Image (cartoon, each protein chain N blue to C red):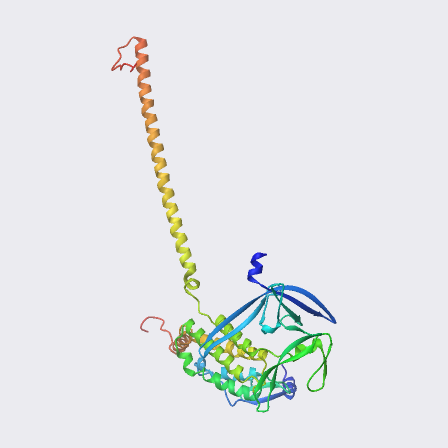
Length: 176
Length: 237
């Protein structure tokens, strides 16, 4: 895409800064990047998407005049609820499939009950509430599956090995 | 037919809306009460399951059922695939009653029943606007309890953990089939061995008898030629 085109697109959209930058390339521990999930869910609920600007910061971009799936109070309170289920340590844990399913089920039911109580306050209808629950739970489940059987820890171990092999040169003739 | 009568005892007449025409269709239905257990308590809901339409709708109130010739009837107005409204007959009026949430003075929501005449296509709303009958879909109000219980059921269905048979069923079946195959193979091989053994024994006997016959023949040949015969046994008769 040309730079002019990008500027033309920028005029049509509204940008909401997140004050959040992704981990640098030197940091091989991108797997701990749990904050991206938080902002991604938020962007999707606001009816937009998550991109990076020239300063390498994440920005929520949404078309001007786009109506979100639920009002701002609803988004704030949903994110507060979801935030309780997301932690940095999740990537370092070893979870089996059954535990992941239980956590997802828990969030799903809690969200359903939460929207049932506050449906009118959040400017929601049952169809849209079902959609919001599915969006949140899909992203949450895929994030949790990173730690299925400690897979993320294995990945961290692999990256460390690669760095070690790159830094230490191989000896060709035994001791020499 | 008899089984149908027992499993779907309620007779249903559905008035399907095509443009300005109502087309009646006949169906059968079953009443079902379902309990969904949650951490906070139990959600109890009742449904009406339509046999031919294959739809599960929230059960209409008992006042919508009619007993005609000892059979229970219910009349429904269908607007789209999943939208059914019960029709009531009172005096000369045929009306559709629609559930509506209204806020009272304190701000609490109260569910009320709004009666709409069926054959008058223009419906006057509270704010004075006129709408046509098909556009009632936009104004329909959902049963929130029904929504919540269905969502919780969805959660249990989507995120259910696999049971023993789902996890290890294939291995168990394979093992059992393998054992049965080995058993059949073993039985087959042993039977084959027995059969060959009896065959070999029979052949041995045949060869022995052939030897005996050859001896006898040689002896008869000797007797004919006038040579002395060795160990001639007398016949039993």
